[in-house]
Length: 432
Ligand SMILES: Cc1cc2nc3c(=O)[nH]c(=O)nc-3n(C[C@H](O)[C@H](O)[C@H](O)COP(=O)(O)OP(=O)(O)OC[C@H]3O[C@@H](n4cnc5c(N)ncnc54)[C@H](O)[C@@H]3O)c2cc1C
Image (tube, rainbow, N blue to C red):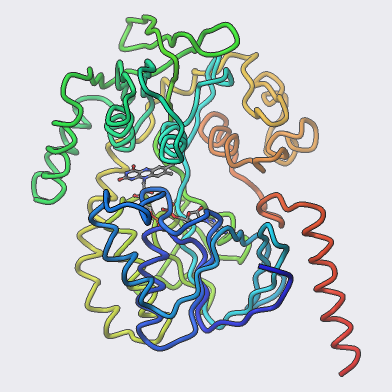
């Protein structure tokens, strides 16, 4: 995409399941629809790379619908600023672009939560979903010893995927306790499809030890991880590994909604029945409104797409399905909430902000994010607090105080082109 201005009736940010569903439904209603996503192809996290294979049967109908729709898909394009109402700035390798819209649907998904512990910055200690994404892009883990640790059902999906691709998965360590997991299992018992999915996953994972109430306390190795120390109750022990794939459930990507001024509730974007946020004509669907898995993202995306296109009747028909999926989301949140013991994971010398090398001891000298940022640069590196932010919130209780553009790093050359767009439009204003 080159520096240019574009105009749409409905603009969607994020081409995961929620964004794809929103685009299909909005364009069914005959509007000019575009969807921007920073990945090379639509699919989001769960369907990464699925457009090129038939290996993901539940994805196929959505790819077909999207291809048949008139929605314009702008892949490799990242929305990074909201310069004025009805406008977003987006960057891509070709330059920056101002995109205008009448309605906006935010489907920005979620990311893994990382909790720092001694050794977590060693090479080959990696996000569980991150390692899965690498393998989906062709990275080989054949024969590698892998420990999968942290929290949430993603650990199971990742372990199954890694095993299928030749990884030697030694152990899955889940921090949540058996009583919580059993309650979660009982809640699933009333949802036939989820039960069937869990059973299929159990078969794929046969023979891999699954330990609940177990979490990593340190990673060790010379130049890269060679072992992980795990704790379960009073017992600690070491497991040898080539990779430690580790993530503690998910956190929503709410930076763009916050930049637009959308209100949050309990950390998630607040929406009404039609998925409209507290900002008129701005909708939100999928993981930013609550971590609830594929089905919830799809149904929320459809509701948002219909509602943004003004077809409230079609949206209303999906409310019951969404309510069912929201119950699952609530059960997920209860089952995988983090245990108190994890507050003591990092030592004083552990880096919390790995971009700027800021230790826990340095952070403890301050009382809030703003002071810590000013004095230590915590959260000001290339990830812009996406990794350390949720960790700091869990460990020290500090919530981020502001979101500033650009919400993603943008190259200076792209920004220079952005300036030229701005000067072009102010020149046009002067000429009028
Ligand atoms: C790393 C990871 C791996 C996962 N793997 C699995 C799995 O194997 N199995 C499973 O059942 N569930 C998995 N999940 C959970 C799964 O993502 C959800 O259940 C659900 O499918 C999310 O759909 P979504 O459309 O809400 O978000 P996502 O699928 O996350 O899609 C959001 C999209 O928006 C893009 N985006 C965000 N901000 C911007 C921006 N400013 N500009 C442009 N694009 C932007 C993102 O890159 C992404 O492509 C995974 C989650 C994560 C975080």
